Image (cartoon, rainbow, N blue to C red):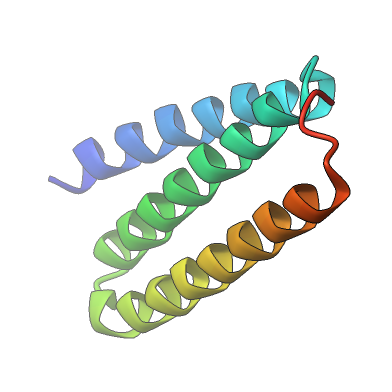
Length: 90
């Protein structure tokens, strides 16, 4: 089972790199914000996979919940910023 988690974590890390490229080169601001959301979700899953691999899932669940809360706050702040700025076209 640990080998499965390792392979899945490697595939997920590769996906994170691909999404990071989309965040970097995104043609519009929407691509970048959606990329941040996808990357945040993938990082949470990767943290939980690492916790399962090292058999300390109980500790890393709390860290992933805190990371998700910070991500939610960041998305709300970005949404409010672009709502006030009016620059939704990028």
